[in-house]
Length: 215
Image 1 (cartoon, rainbow, N blue to C red):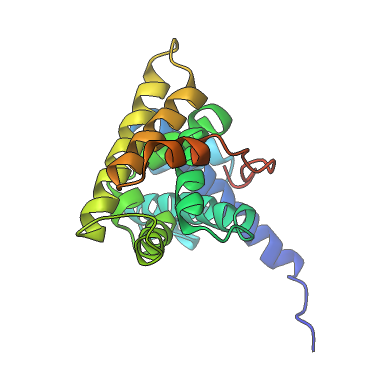
Image 2 (cartoon, helix red, strand yellow):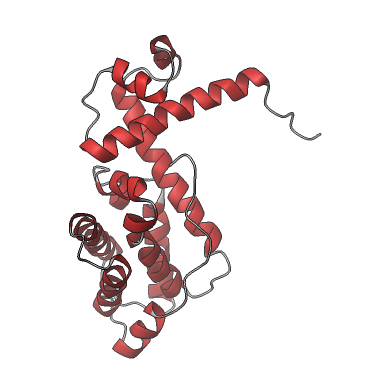
């Protein structure tokens, strides 16, 4: 039997929860914290104050959900647009190139990722496990050379976050060129020769736009 579509009540509850998460994402992207009142959050979400505790027990729980949904949304999008790419080195590099470009394409999402308390690097959800898997596959295929995948992931994530900060704070910087230069350097760091690294960074990117919701 096919699943029943959500009822009107269930759709309303989902809209309210999404509105709270979206408000938290916006506040966090702008401030770097959620140190505002619950009243301010519900006003930003355009929902009643009493609705908050129907979905979250605290602002901390809301912030965790806002960060997690940002990471999951981005990771799911990357997995979809790269599903037909067989070379794990290309998957890894293209994921980095697309993530760096979020500063231009989805600035709020980029700021949540940058301020996500290391979640882009170490969370058990979102892009971190995908990136680790891609590095491991690239090493197994002889495409990358690294003695410790954890250190490799740390270096790549650090380079990516720093690049996003640079692009976000310096209006003179070309986001696309800077993101690609960072990926080129990371591929070299992973033992890839210059010509092959440049070929990969020059590959056309998927045409799909980044996810439009809930960001």
